[in-house]
Image 1 (cartoon, rainbow, N blue to C red):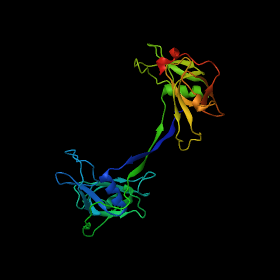
Image 2 (cartoon, rainbow, N blue to C red):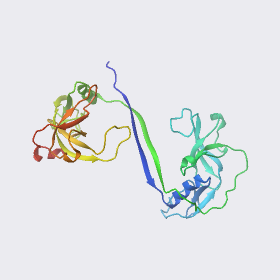
Image 3 (tube, rainbow, N blue to C red):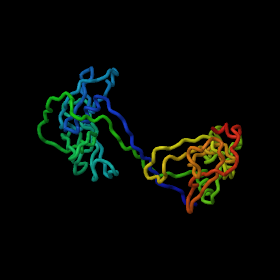
Image 4 (cartoon, helix red, strand yellow):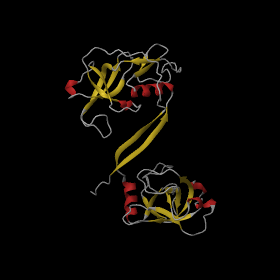
Length: 313
């Protein structure tokens, strides 16, 4: 049996959002070691607070300070923390209802082992040494056997409030291609582009999917396409991507390879970005040891007629 192809892949990007008045006060409060909830129209105190009442959808404004002590309502032991999680050693993920709140807040609970954690145990907030106005200002929860702490009155007004947050989003996974994509990758290793033809509608799909997305039937017939193609649509990239050594601006385009009925996307090089156009004829440029073309460049041929690629837009 041939070796199964697999590769680690990471999808990562920063998620940026602005904050409404309630979230702004909550996160700024954490920076100042103050935990604020919000009171609903029914009198319940939500922590973490919401901008709108989950029952009535009314806008909420009544901020309420709650204690930094609370009770574990449920928990799960994390025996192998992942990079970027609150603690480096094993810990419990716990839902903690802080004293004065009616809902629970999720956080890490620093405990020596799962036998030391139980529903109903008392805990308190351990504040981060450096706080910036983020939920990570609560470094974790820790066991606590003292009396409930009494929060000082607070209306939610702070100097230099936090107005926005940037939350990194990351997904690590292992990708394993199927039969059709493995065949496509094997062909690329020989600097060929191979698609598959649908036996019913006869369209050639590149990259192949193993089945026709229109007819829903399996595809197995290999068809070599290209290597030249036509730019159908494109965009100019003006924001430099992290870990990508390409100067901006540059062009990413959909390219309909000759003989294919589906456009693939690739970078366009060898031409100023403002001279790339629909209908431009291009060819692949390979680099030594690459698994796919580095980019596509103009062939010097006349532009393709619009009618020849309009169905691939």
